[in-house]
Length: 315
Image (cartoon, rainbow, N blue to C red; front, side):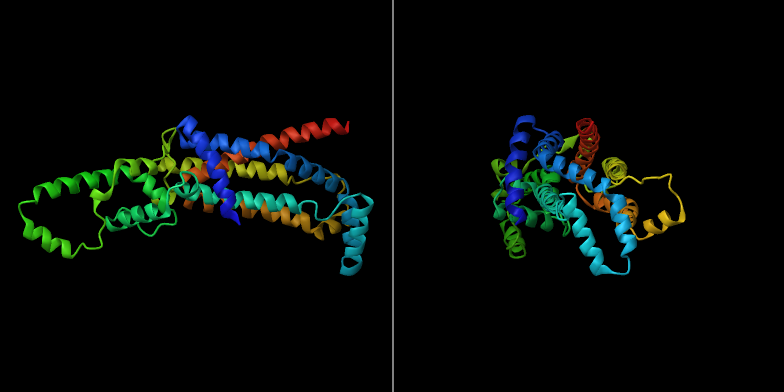
């Protein structure tokens, strides 16, 4: 289900890349285009959130009144939604779209040779085997990223093997003996420049190699984008789920809030999500972290802009 979306996004990202010839810039432009395409859904979601905020007090009263009566609680909540001309499932479509988008972009950035460059799977398998045979990689979760990262090393190995073959032509007996142990080893002479060029993506961006995975490198600069992403995500999360401090602090209101699952969920999200973001960003290629960083920045701009526009409309 996700692969067709990743394949479609791959055409878009590859088109942008062919224009700018830089993977990082292409990711940023791609993020902006996706955010613009999602704008109608975001506007509808924002309006729904505002309506939900307006009836929050009524929802709390119902939750407090029927806290020990789930059946009447559900009935009263449905009646409230009906009276306010709202649907309890109004945010489901937006959530589904965002989940599909999240996984599709993950597939795309994790496997850019498959979804962006449209390289044949047999070619990718061949170079994955070359990487393993020459100890350039282990069983990584991002083999295509590692192939792109080590293209120059593969070229160097090919040059060395060609030179070695030229120097061992006179010692045919030794070559024959070695070949018995290397029957399954891929011959570098089978690799041509056109094929290598089809695997190459310019991953250099502001002094960073977007093919790097922070936990698999000693370069401290690889941690810049993940840390910025976590910081921006926390700000975005605060804007999306603000903690409201009300002047009403009597015991009754405090008791109501205790039974509000949305308040508790938001509090948990503010703690759990930043940890989750950092954990994933540290084991993902920097190209994916850059997309997430750009998307979080755009989300902040979108949130502030829509709040202003919708507020002006209400006035």
